[in-house]
Length: 248
Image (cartoon, rainbow, N blue to C red; front, side):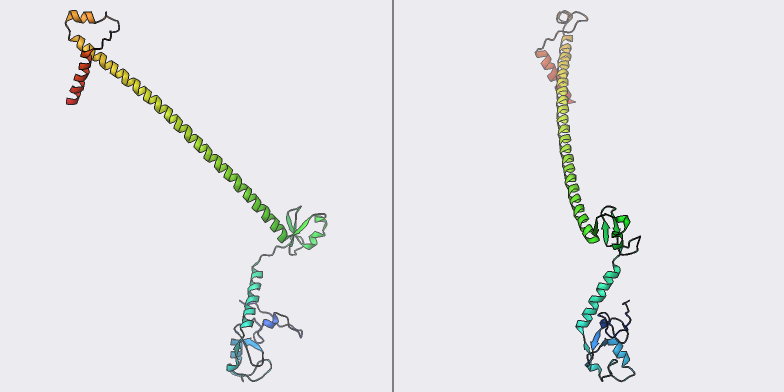
């Protein structure tokens, strides 16, 4: 809905009133100019001529539909004014809670909005005041600086966490290598002990095949640890076991 402006009572119309149609007293819609120079909404002048003579509604000079000329300059001006007023109406205006005036100042001490009356009041006596736009600009600069500082601190923290992650991974890799080495050492020791036991078992098997006299000469006294006598027979026993296992 377009705003309606009543005509001014005085002889000199205001700038806004110059943008009103003399018929509907509203901002021009599709403004047209008659040959006499008066402007009207195209719809308004067309309706006024439906059952009347085709004359100017203001000066009564004869005219016709052929004389109607679209006034692009006036239409653009009306559109611009209406757009600016719409933006002003859509903008929130903060009011001073004490004096109910538009709060155009900001008290730096109390950190609150104030009006021009507050500036000279006892409540804000000696306080430093700044225009809202200036104070907002200063705070925006400070907020930008603080945001940049937080971003740098965050980057430092992120870098620290990356370094800690690398250090922990390196420590885990070193621990894994150490444990892997221990496991390999144990496996090697077990393999050696297994071979020794296998050789001993083979030697015992060979000894058991000997006759009683030879067995007693080779075998140590009862309860003592058997004497290791590596020889060809033991190696052949290992080979026989390996061949037997392969045939299975």
